[in-house]
Length: 317
Image (cartoon, rainbow, N blue to C red; front, side):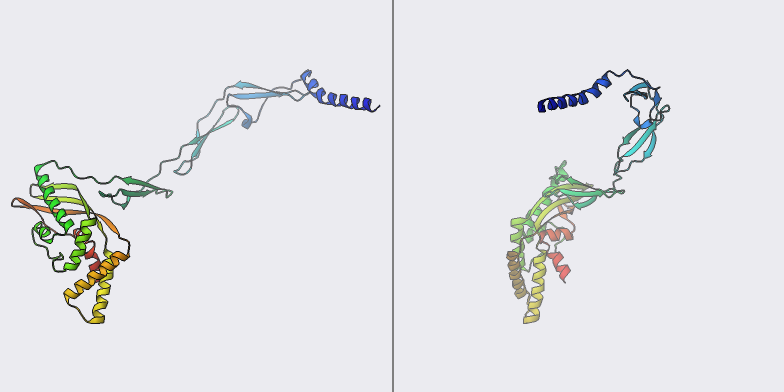
């Protein structure tokens, strides 16, 4: 008896599952009239109509005609941060079509130099968008050694190179011979400090002549890229200690102070990590007789030759 009841239950379940599909498949459709659908339901291929069977609810769609699009209209303008949008409508069914507009280019400001290029390091520049503030960066290649193109340029380069070679050795006599007028701002008397400068320049000073600009046949400007030890902090501390030494002891003879300051410089040079500076500077030269001579001793030249001694001295005193 139980087996018969179970069999009947299985048969009834099959009927319930199969019957709707069978009814639908065998439906003799009774279609309503075609009607236009809502514009958002329309397809890209064209304007469509739809009809529905009142018996099973099945729907049929047909394309009535291609869309008749109007002109594109601006919805949202583009800027440098967001895309814009345009849209248009079908004149028949009012279906809507939209498309994205590309972002505008950034209205960049001027390039700002963060680090000038030298023969020993690349340059680094920054600019910002005037609208959104987005920043852009670029790297500029290192400067290269100048290639002379005339006999006069060769003469100028040879004279400038002689000066730089003498500066690297800190040969005061040869340095002075490169000038049209003898210079007094070299460490001729301070032999101990001169000794420190000489050792530093010999070990660390590097230079490259990157440009030679002629002004007629008797004047020229030479641009030099130079890397050297930046001993500004060391010298500044030595000036402070020297002043305190004078106050404390009353001893102020130049020879004693020169040696005392030198000892303080050596102490700080060993104590602190060495700093280096890279600088571009111009050397103005003039042909006097048959030789090219330097006409001015600029602050940048003094700093490069003296490891920033001049700047430290001026700032302290």
